Length: 139
Ligand SMILES: [Zn+2]
Image 1 (cartoon, rainbow, N blue to C red):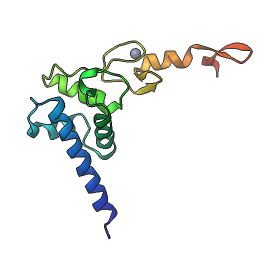
Image 2 (image 1 turned 60 degrees about the horizontal axis):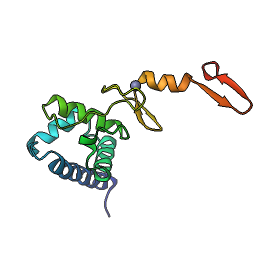
Image 3 (image 1 turned 180 degrees about the vertical axis):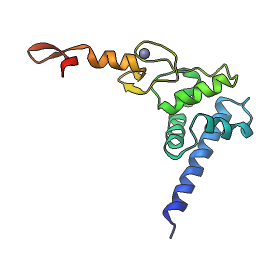
Image 4 (image 1 turned 60 degrees about the vertical axis):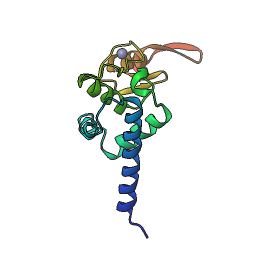
């Protein structure tokens, strides 16, 4: 009978292997020995971030070159770290609301990640309620 810790360690290893394979395919010029440092710098090496990263890269192998804002926040952090490390083929996702390229895309909207101000604009904007107009700022 396996313990919970052994199971978690195994999942972590599987996620790490999936990420290493995805990096090998997407960024063959990135030395494998550099990957753990890149992941740590992007805070992508912890359990949930690593799992989100592995899952997203397996569903979207082009996630680091597409610049799509429809991604978990770990992809945004990773794209910025890789870009700063000189991997210029890596496209940093822009805000789905205003297009701004920033590492700070904390919210998720219907079209992808949003910066703080785009997120606030969509939250405070006028919206139609049944039978009336109202300003949601006063909610
Ligand atoms: Zn924005």
